[in-house]
Image (cartoon, rainbow, N blue to C red; front, side):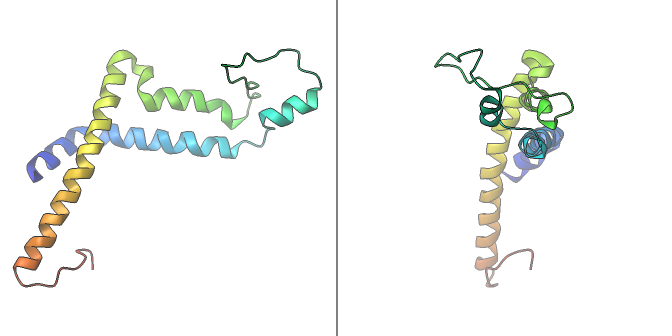
Length: 128
């Protein structure tokens, strides 16, 4: 298990780092926007000129210079859509790799914990 964990991490480290950074940015950027939200915008303009169909989410477009305008770009970078079908496949494989790393890392940690206990050492956290 350790060998698989180590070798797969070599190949997926850069992709997972990219996905993590763009995911964090896509959550932080909307918080930086000081513009008005959809409801404030709608109430400020009076009667709506357009009635949104029930199955759609209608939001006003962000104004120029608003950091929230980057969210669409960040989503495409995060999902791999910017690189076409190959990018989506790579991002999906990276998602599966992250699930594997989570389970295998936990399993490796449990094995180290048990090994420490079997040697008669107190099973404690390894970073202390």
